[in-house]
Image 1: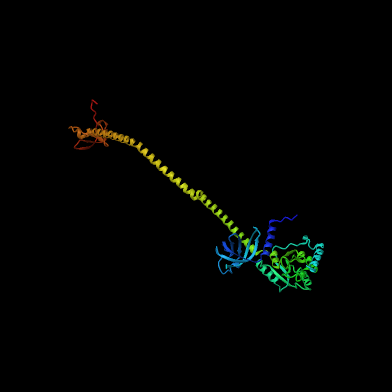
Image 2: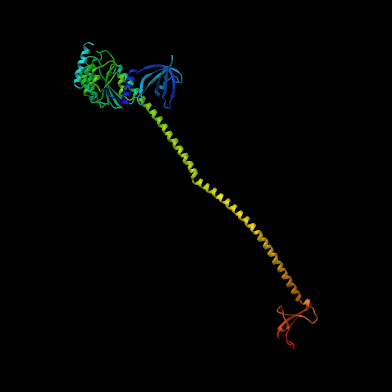
Length: 420
């Protein structure tokens, strides 16, 4: 029964297959949905009448363009096919763009393969795990071969942060296998994160150094994870089976063990824009909440309360004024009859007093000496008070007067009339 893969595992295998099979392509088509981000990366779709494919050109390559990638332009793009594993979508990582215009060796190979398989050299449990972000990789290969240049090129584009240590060895010939085995043992002492051993393509004879048992022994004994990257996809050697990982080509080896910097930049772009969107949404929600709080504060705040109380006070003042005016008008209406009655009463009293004064005047005048001017008669007063003669005593002073004269006298003798 075939083993079950996770989605990520399947995508990783598809990614490796695509990137190693289509490590360089040139594709003609029409640009569509061109998006130029502030980061400098350009995302677009390349299409023809029947199909389309997503493409990305990262900042470094985009900066070298001699023309602008515009919507609807007919171009030829050059790059490598890649799979964006988080979404399982494949795309072209564009590097540039331009406007359109078996014999005995086979028997020996099978014999050694069976021998090593019986010794457990191919056992999956013996395979070591590669670190996700290797810092140092040792390359056991020819310093003058094209394979080294391919691996360095892929590493510089894919993950420039990695440090590469090159151990120069012969990759073909009689002494090549021993030199490779020694180099592997030495590489295992360097404390690196991974080792890549390999070379470019060639004939069966050219690749035979990697079919020697001495190389297989050195590979099996290594504590450091190692990749066998010999020849092309169709080339299989013993080191491919013994190593922890087999790569179809040297450049594919670097793609398999190094993280995809371009993909990570794309992921970072998406995370950044996702975070920006999330932050923007949160800020918008907070802005709305702040607006609601400001409105609520405006409705229930101190100023609003004071304003409301001021309005209530003004309304109360107006009601009091209205009530006072109404009361005053009522009191004025009630006071008018009182005023009339008071006036009538006062006039009655005045008339009464005037009558009394007139009577008093008349009485006074009737008692005045000038109205009693009879010969031989005079009015007697003592201390300004009219008295009768019988009220006088000897020694009293009194005044006798008529309307013409006033005489002050003193009683020296009193004779009573016999009839008194």
